[in-house]
Length: 409
Length: 224
Image 1: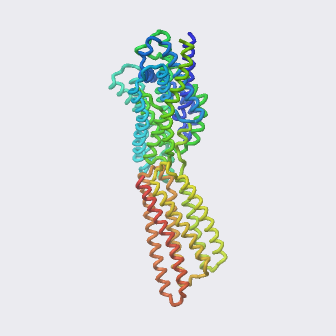
Image 2: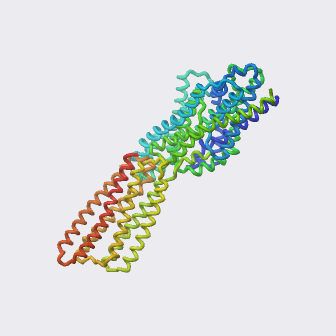
Image 3: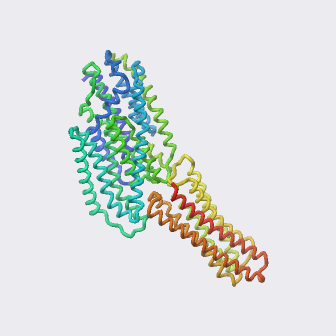
């Protein structure tokens, strides 16, 4: 292994570390905050789910990232330029995400890698596909809106069918198996249909997912019958508190689901450029299509997990302590909406931000009257970050490119 | 990432419930005040008046804190105006209780033996009206847990109907008291009648404000 490959691995690992550190609180913070999980349990589940998501469903976004942003044919005669550029882009976004995480500022790793690739492209004088950029920008706006709408309708139906009924406990006992099966079926569908690459036709994949959902429903119904006592004639206030206890388990499921979706979506940010660097360096040519080998996904997943354990722990602690408002029923709605939106977008090859989607989803729950008071200034912060992240990562990447190129070329 | 933590604007309804409780503490002093008046215990009236004024200013402080926290950049799960009106009206309840106490200290105007039962019946009904408001006001947090829907909303709505009914009953009792006053007006000097009117107007102000607060709460449930 030569210096370039080692460098690519180290930078890629650094990038995936910062991704793990940055975003894991989105998945687990709410569960720790509502007391559904202890910190240790949350870390444990996050590690498993992030890693599984990264390795099993991870490889879909990469093609969009490295190839759709700048014109690769520009580098046909000078593949090492592209190698330097990718390294610069990775390093720039890792540094930016790290700084932002340190300052407690919300940024998106996806945005920052797009900005990084763009930055060295401009510095090298390559053509940048602005139309493609438009599509990517649109997906940033769409993802929180989609997450928000999804969460709005999900919470509205929870409010109507469970929280607002005369006997919320009975309703929750009856309906939570259905919610559990929904989570498991969606998760199974994303796993079977695309993730495991079994080449199953869609109807079979769908049937298998529904089967998995039914098994989950039966298991949930059994568990509820066994462990959740009937509460009859209790005052509404106590009944609602009891319903939240049932929702805890659903919230834990969706928390793992978010971590899984995050791993699936974001590992490509780190691993995609890494794969491109390795490929270009090895074959001295610009590939038509880079297939990401599984060992690279494992490395990316490992980096994310490392970030979760070393840095994300602290972030979960701070965030989790502050968001008592997001009770399990609200957390479930917001997280389920987020994970589904993120998985869907990652299937469509759109790089989206988990943080921004979950904020959109929480605001969706707020619009459904689920949260007493939300701070709309955060929405403004998100827009600021959209605007700031791409140019900052871009400029940083351009500077790094201009430094690296004379060294390696 | 502090992003999620920053997104939440606290639990303003908890403070609103505290305010409603504090307001009712003021009203709870009305019964001892009336008893002191009947017992001609002017020292007790002075002491109770000071207590009511202290409670009223405590309620004011809670209210001011809530108002600061309800700044425009927060998205609330209820209509901001309705919540504001609810606070204004509960605030008026405390004002009514305080003014009743103050009026008692201005001039020593005892209630004649013949009017006592009617007067106490009216006083008790006014306090009941405020109690009925407290009962629904305390539900605000639970209402929010249930996302202002379904059974909990119906329960609170029924409680609001109860406030209106009690306010109407208080009106009837006030009229009965007034009729009784004028029936024996030959035995009373005009300033005494004037003072009785003062007593009554402050007491009915409490009941009316409780009813209005209930209606604001109904609007909070109905329009998100």
